Length: 443
Image 1 (cartoon, one colour):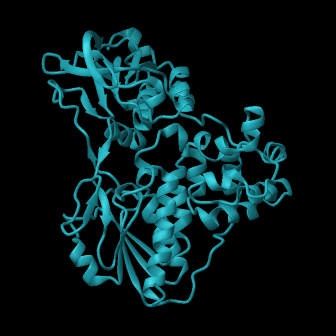
Image 2 (cartoon, rainbow, N blue to C red; image 1 turned 90 degrees about the vertical axis):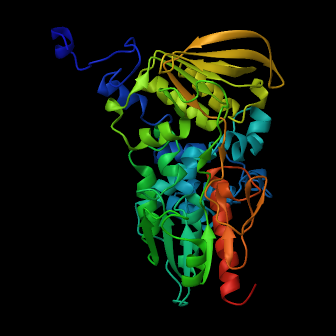
Image 3 (cartoon, one colour; image 1 turned 90 degrees about the horizontal axis):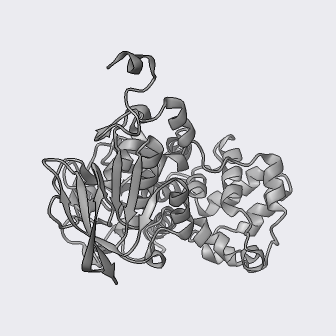
């Protein structure tokens, strides 16, 4: 380090070649990873709530995968009882605080809002939900356990589906043991969401709040197939719920995929969520291959860490991207370049990534015209797959469709539904109700 570098708080900059940490000052990184939209205060929330028409047979309720009574909770905010609004939300979605932060509300409840249809500006349902749940979480846990049933249920996976299932079962008076492969509970909320969407440790704070109902034990470092088996869980418990998510990642299947600097976007996001961001290395020239939320989160956060050039490349057109138009616009505003209708051909470099060759495509199929992007870091984000599935389960479309006697499944690992946090919560909640009915002899 030279004298100039020694006096400067950074050892690197956006122009440093290769993959390097500390490209931006710590205070800039802190600002970059703060809330994209700051939370409402009480006055702002009541002003926003006053825009709601409180529709009868409201389309926003139908659009919500957990069927929250949205007009009711907004009316409760408007009348100065946000803690009651939180209870209305939690009755349907016990992870309503996190969902308020990460749900694509612009394509769910807010897209269905009649204000959106009439004016092009919906009621800010997501921010109102965040306000209500934040107020509610500052108070004692609102739910109590029913009388003990003597039943014990195993939940595999401490993600949104598993946590929602466990909480509902605990409410019913059952004892629950959650087996989680990672060091922390939270699943996608803890490891798979952009850091600026879940600031100040909120994901873990929500888990701690959820667990305060009692009756739920979490055993971390317990992976299905390595530390526990499905047959063993069946033998030791009255029921089993599988919420194992999607642990596998699709490969590009092109030359150079094994070069240094090429990695799965989900691993990068997970590392980022647990790291000191001022020490997390990122490339100068970053290429992200994919068109979903994982691709957007990896691309935007690379830019926020100080990468000079970040390019997302998607094989089809803008309208076919699974990332919403809102998220695509957010990426563009963050300085990410998005290239549509191009497929990767090869990653080149002498032992480490240096460039990626692409071909322009029609309907996802490569044509003759090619181009090359400079890249010292390449993130693969073309979808995840189910991995580590126990024998004896019926699969459909690569997901669990037939769990078998005494076993239920929900969340991303289960067939049917979108791979969204809110959908996982709904499936975990509904599985808990089915398990309870089965154990109490009402199924």
